[in-house]
Image (cartoon, rainbow, N blue to C red):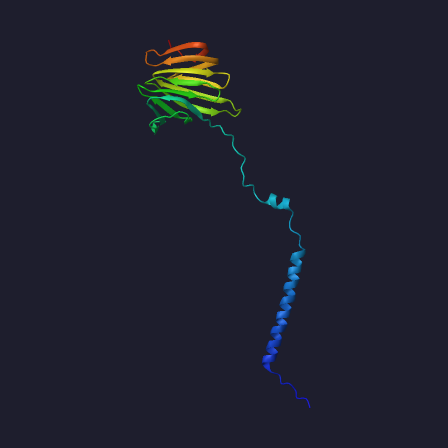
Length: 204
Protein backbone atom coordinates (compact mmCIF):
# COMPACT_ATOMS: atom_id res chain seq x y z
CA UNK A 1 0.00 0.00 0.00
CA UNK A 2 1.45 3.34 -1.06
CA UNK A 3 1.58 6.28 1.29
CA UNK A 4 1.12 9.76 -0.17
CA UNK A 5 4.16 12.04 0.07
CA UNK A 6 3.33 15.08 2.13
CA UNK A 7 3.84 18.54 0.57
CA UNK A 8 7.02 19.42 2.40
CA UNK A 9 7.91 23.14 1.88
CA UNK A 10 11.64 22.27 1.85
CA UNK A 11 11.14 20.00 -1.16
CA UNK A 12 9.23 22.73 -2.98
CA UNK A 13 11.93 25.36 -2.29
CA UNK A 14 14.68 23.03 -3.48
CA UNK A 15 12.77 22.32 -6.68
CA UNK A 16 12.33 26.02 -7.34
CA UNK A 17 16.06 26.66 -6.86
CA UNK A 18 16.99 23.89 -9.28
CA UNK A 19 14.52 25.23 -11.84
CA UNK A 20 15.86 28.80 -11.55
CA UNK A 21 19.44 27.56 -11.91
CA UNK A 22 18.52 25.65 -15.07
CA UNK A 23 16.90 28.75 -16.59
CA UNK A 24 20.00 30.86 -15.76
CA UNK A 25 22.31 28.30 -17.39
CA UNK A 26 20.18 28.29 -20.55
CA UNK A 27 20.15 32.11 -20.75
CA UNK A 28 23.91 32.35 -20.18
CA UNK A 29 24.57 29.79 -22.90
CA UNK A 30 22.33 31.72 -25.30
CA UNK A 31 24.12 35.05 -24.63
CA UNK A 32 27.54 33.42 -24.99
CA UNK A 33 26.51 31.88 -28.31
CA UNK A 34 25.32 35.27 -29.59
CA UNK A 35 28.61 36.93 -28.58
CA UNK A 36 30.63 34.19 -30.24
CA UNK A 37 28.98 34.67 -33.61
CA UNK A 38 29.43 38.49 -33.68
CA UNK A 39 32.50 39.14 -35.88
CA UNK A 40 35.16 41.54 -34.54
CA UNK A 41 35.46 44.93 -36.29
CA UNK A 42 38.01 45.07 -39.11
CA UNK A 43 41.56 45.90 -38.12
CA UNK A 44 41.69 48.98 -40.30
CA UNK A 45 38.56 50.43 -38.68
CA UNK A 46 40.12 49.93 -35.24
CA UNK A 47 43.25 51.75 -36.35
CA UNK A 48 41.30 54.56 -37.96
CA UNK A 49 39.20 55.08 -34.82
CA UNK A 50 42.30 55.51 -32.67
CA UNK A 51 44.15 58.84 -32.90
CA UNK A 52 47.76 58.64 -34.01
CA UNK A 53 50.12 59.09 -31.09
CA UNK A 54 53.25 59.59 -33.21
CA UNK A 55 53.99 63.07 -34.48
CA UNK A 56 56.10 63.44 -37.62
CA UNK A 57 59.73 64.12 -36.65
CA UNK A 58 60.85 67.71 -36.96
CA UNK A 59 63.94 68.39 -39.03
CA UNK A 60 67.07 68.62 -36.92
CA UNK A 61 68.59 72.05 -37.52
CA UNK A 62 71.07 71.87 -34.66
CA UNK A 63 74.75 71.44 -35.49
CA UNK A 64 77.77 70.44 -33.46
CA UNK A 65 81.35 71.00 -34.60
CA UNK A 66 84.55 70.27 -32.68
CA UNK A 67 87.69 71.74 -31.18
CA UNK A 68 90.45 70.38 -33.37
CA UNK A 69 93.31 71.86 -31.30
CA UNK A 70 93.67 73.34 -27.81
CA UNK A 71 96.86 74.71 -26.28
CA UNK A 72 97.29 76.44 -22.93
CA UNK A 73 94.46 77.95 -20.93
CA UNK A 74 91.15 78.24 -22.81
CA UNK A 75 87.85 78.88 -21.02
CA UNK A 76 84.41 78.04 -22.40
CA UNK A 77 81.28 80.07 -21.66
CA UNK A 78 77.66 79.47 -22.56
CA UNK A 79 76.56 83.05 -23.11
CA UNK A 80 77.69 84.86 -19.97
CA UNK A 81 77.73 81.73 -17.79
CA UNK A 82 80.92 79.66 -17.38
CA UNK A 83 80.51 76.21 -18.97
CA UNK A 84 84.01 74.67 -18.78
CA UNK A 85 87.03 76.02 -16.96
CA UNK A 86 89.30 74.34 -19.50
CA UNK A 87 88.53 73.39 -23.09
CA UNK A 88 89.84 70.04 -24.34
CA UNK A 89 90.60 68.79 -27.82
CA UNK A 90 87.73 67.14 -29.74
CA UNK A 91 85.05 68.45 -27.39
CA UNK A 92 81.80 69.32 -29.23
CA UNK A 93 81.00 72.94 -29.98
CA UNK A 94 77.38 74.10 -30.18
CA UNK A 95 75.60 77.35 -30.86
CA UNK A 96 76.04 80.03 -28.21
CA UNK A 97 79.45 78.94 -26.91
CA UNK A 98 82.04 81.65 -26.23
CA UNK A 99 85.76 80.89 -26.06
CA UNK A 100 88.36 82.98 -24.24
CA UNK A 101 92.09 82.25 -24.50
CA UNK A 102 94.54 83.27 -21.78
CA UNK A 103 97.92 84.81 -22.56
CA UNK A 104 99.26 81.29 -23.22
CA UNK A 105 96.13 79.89 -24.89
CA UNK A 106 95.47 78.92 -28.50
CA UNK A 107 92.40 77.33 -30.02
CA UNK A 108 91.22 75.92 -33.35
CA UNK A 109 87.59 75.13 -34.23
CA UNK A 110 86.95 72.87 -37.21
CA UNK A 111 83.65 72.84 -39.12
CA UNK A 112 82.06 70.03 -41.15
CA UNK A 113 83.50 71.15 -44.49
CA UNK A 114 87.05 71.56 -43.17
CA UNK A 115 86.80 75.31 -42.53
CA UNK A 116 88.57 76.50 -39.38
CA UNK A 117 88.63 79.44 -36.99
CA UNK A 118 91.77 80.04 -34.90
CA UNK A 119 92.29 82.09 -31.76
CA UNK A 120 95.66 83.45 -30.69
CA UNK A 121 96.52 84.26 -27.04
CA UNK A 122 94.25 86.78 -25.27
CA UNK A 123 91.45 86.47 -27.83
CA UNK A 124 87.76 85.64 -27.77
CA UNK A 125 85.03 84.59 -30.20
CA UNK A 126 81.40 83.48 -29.89
CA UNK A 127 79.61 80.93 -32.09
CA UNK A 128 76.42 82.99 -32.19
CA UNK A 129 74.80 80.95 -34.96
CA UNK A 130 75.46 77.31 -35.77
CA UNK A 131 72.53 75.68 -37.58
CA UNK A 132 70.99 74.56 -40.88
CA UNK A 133 68.26 76.22 -42.90
CA UNK A 134 65.23 74.20 -44.15
CA UNK A 135 67.17 73.28 -47.31
CA UNK A 136 70.03 71.81 -45.24
CA UNK A 137 72.56 74.59 -45.92
CA UNK A 138 74.87 75.22 -42.97
CA UNK A 139 74.72 78.72 -41.48
CA UNK A 140 77.65 79.85 -39.32
CA UNK A 141 77.94 83.26 -37.66
CA UNK A 142 81.01 84.01 -35.57
CA UNK A 143 81.36 87.07 -33.35
CA UNK A 144 84.98 88.22 -33.05
CA UNK A 145 85.01 89.72 -29.56
CA UNK A 146 88.65 90.61 -28.93
CA UNK A 147 92.23 89.90 -29.90
CA UNK A 148 93.69 88.45 -33.10
CA UNK A 149 91.77 85.68 -34.87
CA UNK A 150 92.35 83.79 -38.14
CA UNK A 151 89.80 82.22 -40.47
CA UNK A 152 89.93 79.72 -43.33
CA UNK A 153 86.35 79.53 -44.58
CA UNK A 154 84.82 77.66 -47.50
CA UNK A 155 82.01 79.89 -48.71
CA UNK A 156 80.88 77.20 -51.14
CA UNK A 157 80.32 74.71 -48.31
CA UNK A 158 77.84 76.90 -46.42
CA UNK A 159 77.02 80.43 -45.34
CA UNK A 160 79.75 81.98 -43.19
CA UNK A 161 79.98 85.44 -41.66
CA UNK A 162 82.33 86.89 -39.07
CA UNK A 163 80.96 89.86 -37.18
CA UNK A 164 82.92 92.53 -35.37
CA UNK A 165 80.59 95.08 -33.91
CA UNK A 166 78.34 96.48 -36.65
CA UNK A 167 80.56 95.04 -39.38
CA UNK A 168 80.37 91.60 -40.98
CA UNK A 169 82.97 89.84 -43.12
CA UNK A 170 81.52 87.31 -45.59
CA UNK A 171 83.83 85.12 -47.70
CA UNK A 172 83.22 84.92 -51.43
CA UNK A 173 83.78 81.25 -52.25
CA UNK A 174 86.87 80.30 -50.22
CA UNK A 175 88.93 82.85 -48.30
CA UNK A 176 91.69 83.07 -45.71
CA UNK A 177 91.80 86.23 -43.59
CA UNK A 178 92.60 87.58 -40.15
CA UNK A 179 90.90 90.13 -37.92
CA UNK A 180 92.85 92.16 -35.39
CA UNK A 181 90.78 93.89 -32.74
CA UNK A 182 93.79 94.95 -30.68
CA UNK A 183 94.21 98.02 -32.89
CA UNK A 184 91.89 100.95 -33.56
CA UNK A 185 90.37 100.92 -36.08
CA UNK A 186 90.07 97.16 -36.41
CA UNK A 187 92.29 95.59 -39.05
CA UNK A 188 91.17 93.08 -41.69
CA UNK A 189 93.81 91.37 -43.83
CA UNK A 190 92.86 88.91 -46.61
CA UNK A 191 95.65 86.53 -47.65
CA UNK A 192 93.67 84.31 -50.03
CA UNK A 193 90.46 84.72 -52.01
CA UNK A 194 88.12 87.63 -51.44
CA UNK A 195 85.53 88.76 -48.91
CA UNK A 196 82.55 91.08 -48.78
CA UNK A 197 82.40 93.58 -45.92
CA UNK A 198 79.09 95.05 -44.83
CA UNK A 199 79.05 98.44 -43.06
CA UNK A 200 82.82 98.31 -43.13
CA UNK A 201 83.61 101.99 -42.82
CA UNK A 202 85.56 101.32 -39.61
CA UNK A 203 87.77 98.66 -41.20
CA UNK A 204 91.30 99.50 -42.38
